[in-house]
Amino acid sequence: ITYTGGGPSNLNNSTTAILYIQNGTIDGNRDTGDRRILRLNPGNVIFENMLLTNSRSINGGGVRVDANSSAVLINTIMTDIEGSSGAALLNNNGSLTLINSTIANNEVINANATGGIWIRGDGAVPSFTMINSVVTGTTRDDGAVIGVGFADVYCTDTDGYNLTYSSGLSNLIGVIRADNGDNCGIAGTDFMTGDAQLGTLADNGGIVQTIAPLAGSPLVNGGNDAAALDSTGAALTTDARGSGFARVNGAAVDIGAYELQGCNSATVTSRSELNVAISDFNSNCANGDTLTATVDGTISMTSSLTTLNNATDAVLLVEGGTIDANDSASVMRLNNGKAVFQNMTLKNANGLNGGTFFVDSNGDLTLINSTISNSIATTGGAIAIQNGVLTLTNTTISDTTRLTNGGAVVSLGGTMNLNNTIIANTVDNSANPVEDCVNSGGVVNFSAGLSNLIEDDVACGTAGTDFIEADPLLGTLADNGGKVETMILLPGSPAVNIGDNTAASGLTTDARGVGFPRILNGTVDLGATENEDLTSPALLTLDPADDSVNVVLTPTLRITLNETIQAGIGNITIKRVSDDGVAATFDVMTDVSFTTDTAEFTVPTALDDATEYYVSIPAGAITDSNGNAFAGFTDNATWS
View (cartoon, helix red, strand yellow):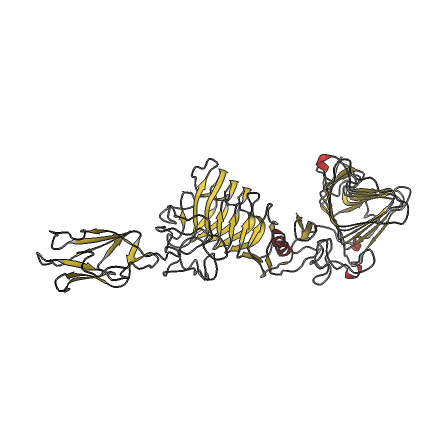
């Protein structure tokens, strides 16, 4: 529900009736006018499995609870709310209960001396009960420091207050303060204080957006199972997201509206499901863990994935499918943690810094057997790193646009490791070719030999020493078989059979998966696909031409085919037409020289004058760079 106009009327019912609101989002839409979510004057309400956000009002920016009124929040999030006299909640002589709820990142306006929640006793004694809940992240619009004039929970004790908490330090209040300077009359041992270590509001699956705790958060397994009850006294079965998200998972219920579901690998088919996996990784994967999200098909999305934020050495592995950002968003920002995208195609991304990925100072991103195509950004058309780590192994990045700065890949400090990778075909906003790779103050490491291709480079290395600088001759992104669309290497591509096999160690397939070997003809190709050229080279010219006369007796003979060729297995022979007698033999491995598309050999001993000869080349003596055999000819008429 998104509010317009003046917002809802106040709840005004003096009976014991209860308004029950569940399973959704209420957006106060404050950009169109100040309004709170609800005022109880008097009345009774229960919010369960709800997100309340984006409202603004004086005297309780989200919900105001007046005398003879009660509000119960169960599995509910209140965030991004602005208000004076209680940024999110004002309990003005009423009764307020939080059960497994998250009140986070709300702002006190008008430099008011209250808090995220204001408990105000004015002629009565207000009641405030916290059960497995967290109140944190309150700020003030004048930039004041929390604890000096305002707090996450603030109490005014004109007539005292009745504050109760579930037992066992099963609540967290970032900062609590009363106007007389105490902790609202309760002992600090009744709840935790400090940093809750929460992520940001995001689509983590389910019926509402949620705020997940990060790995190491004190909220994880910090609650009291016996107190995690709904309004009827029954045990809560789900967190705020609803069905499929257990309320208790692990040693104990988590504090707040979100329950970690564990560091569990999953198959994902949507942005929402992938976000669940990322959130679980952020919150619950520890040193040595790997959470694998296997992408089934194509994930289509119009906003970015949840930001990666895990300070351990755990690894998020996303594999085997396509992410299409529909020209609407970047794919992911890595603030902290390690992510690997393998056998993936990432297309149509649009970002500010890094069209597809932005890798911050504590981020570590690896792409293996993956393709980035049609990505656009102001800086770094495909990827930008800011003091982080980027590793590209057998990856193709092509057809990207950088509007202002950098290339397809830009390092603003940090480390780039390039292994068997192609970066090419980058343009500016006028479609003019620009640099593909830009390094500004970082370190770039290359796999051995000339085993990377950067078509147009600026300071990522030295062409001819660290990589080759050439047109990779890529096909367009298309269905070339397998699980994902790819950009195949076209005939004559310089990226064929020049990779570093050591850098591709452990890879058995290319980006397309089973049935598409990673190495053909002994040496890995650059980029995400292995060249599958099955077309045999064909004859273009013979020198001397067929039926030539008056040829010198020790001629140099040349045969030119329609693509790059190399020695196969066998011997080329020169025979007499009269009796098929052998006049000269040439081992293709030692006696024939190959230059691009031409094979050349010289008769070492003079042939007989006034004698007709022919050249015999058996099938397989000459092949293309993919091992496809030239059919050859052994008759006495093709080249005589």
